Length: 162
Image (cartoon, rainbow, N blue to C red; front, side):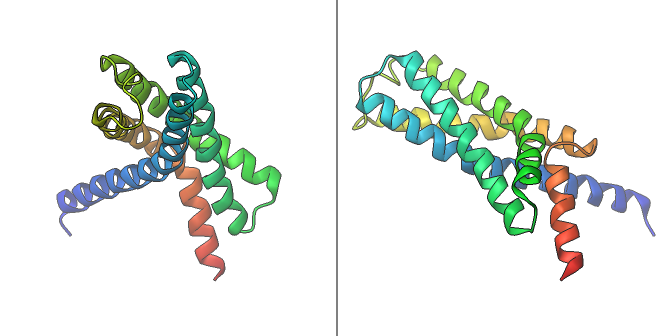
């Protein structure tokens, strides 16, 4: 067996797992982020309040999606909360720092209003930026058995029981 191909395949698998973990995390973050930006902008909140609301909602939805999967896999509520915190905290934090830093760096993005292509375009690009920055972080964590590696182990254990 060619060890180079095996090692290369393992690296590809690890990056695929990191990308999948990041997309999972991004789903919850994006729901919260977009909802927070819409609410904050619609209510005319200060940019800092809009960003804060978006961050709170991103963490809530991000943790919520992981907990939903954990509960569906048979974990109790306490274990599901622990799993969500262990799996998502670093990923969501990196994602929120990067996407909010980006959107704040775009002149007038938050003040543009909900009907503006600038608002929506910068929000979409900020989520892409967050994905690109967070994927290597998740890869690093998964390689060390942290973050979404814990969720991955749960899924393998769940499939082994069926």
